[in-house]
Image 1 (cartoon, rainbow, N blue to C red):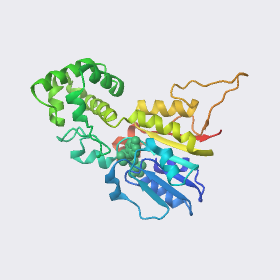
Image 2 (cartoon, rainbow, N blue to C red; image 1 turned 90 degrees about the vertical axis):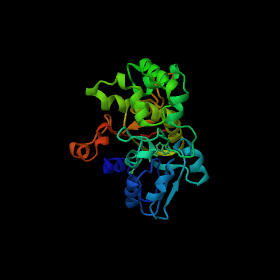
Image 3 (cartoon, rainbow, N blue to C red; image 1 turned 45 degrees about the horizontal axis):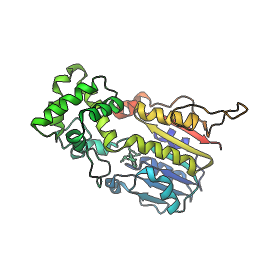
Image 4 (cartoon, rainbow, N blue to C red; image 1 turned 30 degrees about the vertical axis):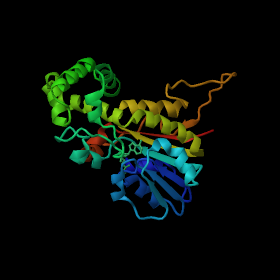
Length: 292
Ligand SMILES: C[S@@+](CC[C@H](N)C(=O)[O-])C[C@H]1O[C@@H](n2cnc3c(N)ncnc32)[C@H](O)[C@@H]1O
């Protein structure tokens, strides 16, 4: 969906664009190809992305969280902007490096921090959160039905031994794993821990609110999300300008929404892309244009 998402920005060659999730630089590279002059400000909270930096004087790559979008754009005198793209979640680079702790495939430390300067990691959550707090994140962020049981297993295990590696975690919850659904179950446990470690949903909400403040009228917001919790926030925000999705009416009953949806239904990848990249199977692309 690389070209569909960049098409969604409707690029004006001399405009100012923002890629808030630089990662491997694929979207940024495509945007730069379509700019003549213009500027691109990119964000990524993972300092490892500096290895993928693109040598182009139109690009500024910031190692910061996109929850600070507005302040950094102001600092770089880049306000207002013509378009913003966000390709949320974890990059394949982060998944594929065992010691980052994002993948269920490796035995590695339970890190899961996107920003390596942060002290708080998944291991801290597993060893220090109370059972109720653990249950809440597994329920909310992993959408796991047996969240309380899972939390109790973790608490019982850590009374004997700290949970420091992915292997420790798998052992702690092994009695709850149904071998037929093992991969899906562990993916949800890891998703919940990752979202909590990086405050992903709070950062996304702050980013979405600020996107509206920094975009020009007719500017585009393009977001690719990878799970329903993210997608719900994006969908509601684009539809209604808030996270509940309640569309407000004025005194006369006129609907007032800040965006016009460019695609009513999310765009999803084709079979070929899913075959090439398994992670793409859950991707949803939404595009909206600021109208007021
Ligand atoms: C799916 S990858 C992006 C891939 C990129 N579009 C490309 O073409 O290579 C997501 C990236 O967003 C970064 N990221 C996720 N949440 C972030 C946040 N709140 N602030 C800044 N960067 C974030 C991650 O570190 C990761 O590198």
